[in-house]
Image (tube, rainbow, N blue to C red; front, side, top):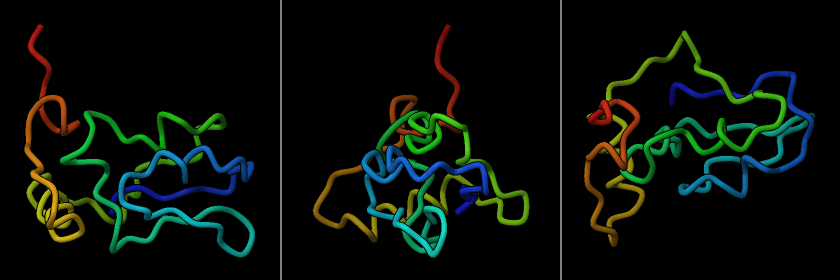
Length: 99
């Protein structure tokens, strides 16, 4: 998980609704992301949906925990063994879109 929610969170819940892994929940004071469930949306979307949905831009990269696309994709496959996930420009922000 290279995504965390910082104190700028306004507790609107927009991020929670967008997470394909159910990794986001209400913490003691603000929403939090479970690092064991976060895949940065790799395998699902071409951007991190929590960050895209967050009005105050409180879902940010955690510089202390950088993970490779392969690691995140493997986690997504373990979380969703019933889904046929793929790595393409549509399902990973690590891959460049063709111009």
